[in-house]
Image (cartoon, rainbow, N blue to C red; front, side):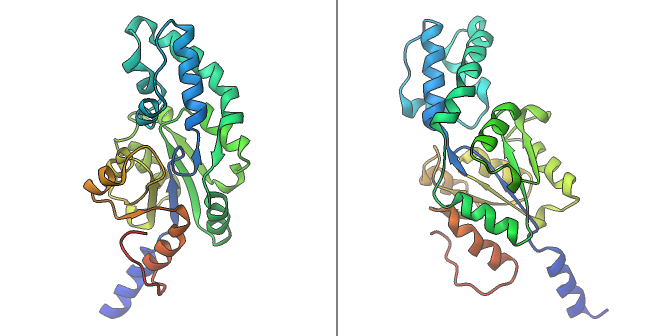
Length: 238
């Protein structure tokens, strides 16, 4: 085999085949539901109400880390239990797909890409939201922080997804909205696209130098096409 043929073969093998998504702030907006359930639990436990922005900044690190900074250690498990019971219903009223998300998932699905979820949400709440938003048939695999030894920002969750599909990091793209997502992608050596529709600011995200920073998730198709060798005039940021 010639050097040129070998390089061409390697290029084909390294094409993006799998797109992995975070959930909150990336595909949907659940912040109203989270804040409502959070402050319901705070009130029930006799703690003061916390501002919406403060709550949003804590999202993405898992439910326990969301509640833990605001309650005494002895109250953590009970507060979490109240939060989870309330959130089961709140997500049905306070969660919406972000603009372009449903169309993007449909496009990727029709184009033959594998689609997975990597979220620090619990499996239970992730599946409830996915079912509520009627996007369950778009995902080939859903993996959450409560099913891995170490949740994000550790690379375990992305490594396990790669293993599930027998793929290498070069064959996947990870899409998230927070600095924790960029850290996770880098740890797993997967190209990470950060969309600025979540709780991390654009400046915070750019400081970590992800592969791409975008303002709208619909830009993802163009990024994938460029990575897979199709001709597009693609700038660093959208």
